[in-house]
Image 1 (cartoon, rainbow, N blue to C red):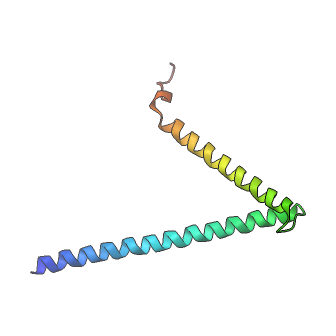
Image 2 (cartoon, rainbow, N blue to C red; image 1 turned 45 degrees about the horizontal axis):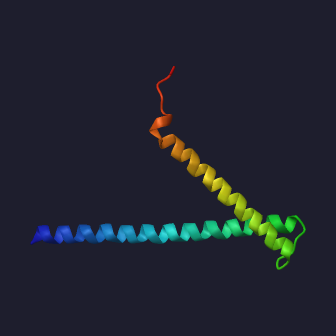
Length: 92
């Protein structure tokens, strides 16, 4: 009986920890996205374009394109690092 109580209590604590982690991760991702949007908006405004204009839309599209290009390069580096065909002994 005591063993069952300990097992159930342990499982509940573990699940509570997982739920808290998910909430914290979601909050951190949302904050990072808000910061990115604010930074990109400020960068476009510094270039003299106003929100709602075509130039502003183009600026934001360019920011998105640059972000996607950077993410692709990071993924490419990770793939290269994990690709065993690129790992050769020193001197070959």
